[in-house]
Image 1 (cartoon, rainbow, N blue to C red):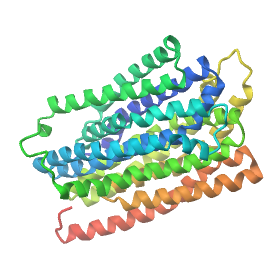
Image 2: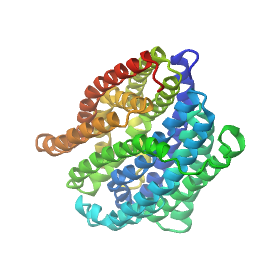
Image 3: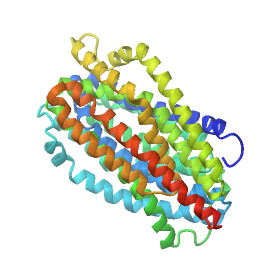
Image 4: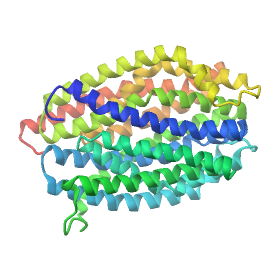
Length: 448
């Protein structure tokens, strides 16, 4: 990504990512649709009640993988294959250690966390069944995201798409098997998710080993290199924590939602699913700009980095407008997918659309978060993602517990947009400060 039009490179790189993310969200939606239509609204609410906790685990894995891959992309841009291979080996060791520790910690506190956020008593057992399995299988998610991020770090966004398609199909088949054939309900959906991610992780690793000679390990690659591990953790842990901090904000909002009862919990869950589906282009662009920034930083291309950020922002504005126009046609049909048509649950659908109609108007600041947060991480900063995440968390907490006083359920729906705006204001300032430091280093001939 160090040669050619930044705009076209970002488009070409992000489209396979977008398709892959779309499939990932679709099979996540299948979990919810299968449970909502074949188990019931309470089971749908049970999954919705742990969406923040699930996001905490999956987001941690995604942030860790993206962070670890930053060093790989920088080495790739600098054409230093020996150091790149060593970074890959150390990222595997670090992923095992961090993944196991976090898996056990999350699992140990699953039920206490659900009790702490006042999860409705009629769904708390189903919620715990689901999230406990997700936490125990966290290592599968960690390695799936690591290997996908490694492939993207060297400019391959198509192979992760293929592996994701395989995982998506597996997840749908296993969902139906564990809900209809073996009626395990929410527990079965969680087992299906972990199994499909584990299989995809194994396939990804085999592909890297067979098809990319630059990543074939040599003697000594797995000898501990504490300096590289320090760099990996310096970027990866803040990246993982910032996703978890964002998830904490989602959990805080969930506390406010839980007070409205299980029907509103179900409606909010549906609204979030639809929002997440359309926002996947921002996730793809964030991954693209992270890889782009890392490779061009390694190559010392300061002006290309600036141009890439500008072009990425233009793409964010374009997609925000497209999403707003699409919302008029797809919001209600998508909401109806989650509810059995034979039941009288129109209020659930109506409240889901209330949420979606509010958040869709704030897609540009949401896109800016992905641009600057992941872009600055690609430039080697672990602090900027943390600062923005903390800002987002504080704003979301304040909004979630003040706005409902005056606006009820709609007030809770505004909590996320308020948090996005606050983070979107501070991130460009951090980016310009980071770029100023990079320019000084490059001017003095320092290696990035």
